[in-house]
Image (cartoon, rainbow, N blue to C red; front, top):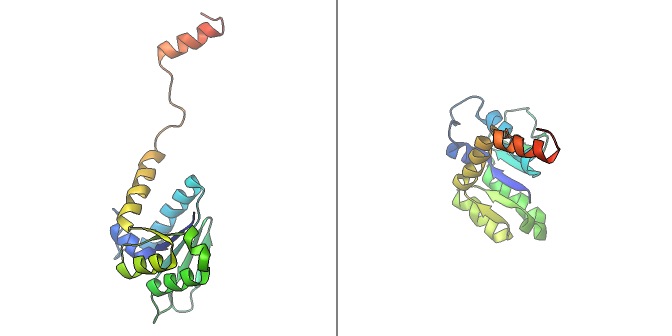
Length: 152
């Protein structure tokens, strides 16, 4: 199930990210790329205030980034996207703590989770990323395997 993400709303809830930082959007994109790659998911993230003349959409692996032009908002762009999806909206999860965005998701019959809940998922994923997938065997386990293969 893909995600529709209110980008600046999520940045405001994510630890170590700050809306005042120049690279806050890029930092979030990298976090989302890692999460989506590990979980075989896709995401579309919306950011307000696209730079003049800049690209309106960019694809970063499993993450599509949509920059909303001045005079519009990410909230409204997400609502329009959900409306275009029609019945398929039920297959998407909207990530935002903004009540207007949550209401749009509900009207479209899409799932929604708060930015705080999604932040918990992202930070848990990041914390687990440093863990070894191949833990060392204890001496007793090695001895048991060696015994099974007839070696002492």
